[in-house]
Length: 236
Image 1 (cartoon, rainbow, N blue to C red):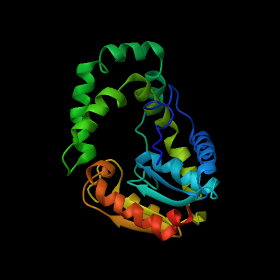
Image 2: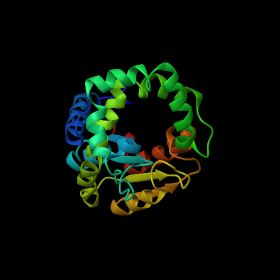
Image 3: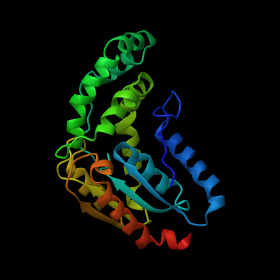
Image 4: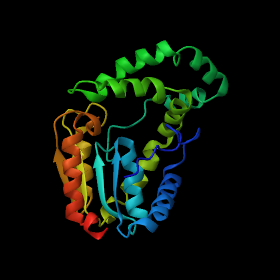
């Protein structure tokens, strides 16, 4: 199993990549690993990570044996950015603004407060995972990841729409796993995404947006069932 830090986050450098460039990078990674396995991969994307995951299945179908989309930020008709967001995003990524934010909003105290306020929304109605809370404080709210979020948000609707236009052409077995209590991505988007993919099953769970943590066992069981249906492991 390989867990990828998307470019601009975690340990994957300072700068984000466009969705098409991310897809090419993931394809190169899978081709490199193909030397160790004859089986195409079970590719899983959570939240906005579902966008490049679905794009990978569309552009490189030979590499993807099955596609799992967990709380996917696809077909989310309510994701219009608020007025003035583009101008604010341009301001937010300026170096001088970054230095100011590091000293104020993104200081240790500021990061702790933001994590405590935002994590309950991500996990509702489940309890907040304390390790995730610490990760948001110590990694997600570091300047490079904060900057990456603002840069990505400006292009999110256009890049997501491009991937969405190819969902109907996907021919790999797929599964969408979503929760009615999701406060981050419109729950109805899960149904729309599943209905857009020909060989896709849709599964509703309890919990909220952070299903990979709060409902990890249930999500893992559904993904393993998908892999069995696609005979991914049998091919390996």
